Length: 239
Image (cartoon, rainbow, N blue to C red):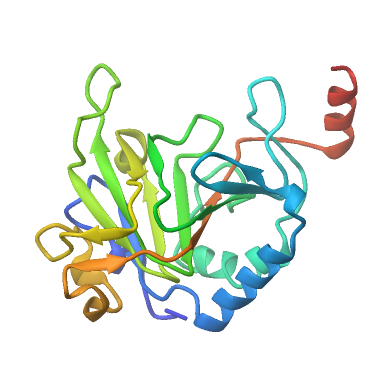
């Protein structure tokens, strides 16, 4: 999909440099296949938090600083359809390993969200997030000089099902992002949603409000530190 698309065509101009948005990055059948594989994983693989649950694939980060990934391949259902398209767009070409090596899977039910935050120093400064199932509205906050965030979000990004959102550069370093805990997103329109003109299906949100469904986000990242499995096991056995 999007064989003729180039990265400059997808930049969200009103955001700090740089964020990119592509609707329908994967097909409905690919979305269903990925979702099926994720839900076949044992419940014990999930980490259950108060307002969402998550998976860390191919493994959780290890080490005292939780910043080291075991040298394992991504599952094929997360890599086969997605990684070639990211590469074709030139994404992750300048990251440490030239491609994502980790996917954080978050499941949000309607009414669930996540506090404003920034991605930590364990990763190269680029993320690529695909949404499955439902939409969400991502709130973007400017970071103040003291490192704290502004009280209210400056921008809102509507992430449709099957879409791709990429953040890098100043957008990655100088902003925080979060999802409000609500069942219905309201006030949606060209004046409030920075990627409105880039949406694949504006009519789905033309009424100005949209009820959330369960959404799974796949956030592709490149973890800087990677440990061979044998070395990691020796490290853990010393603990």
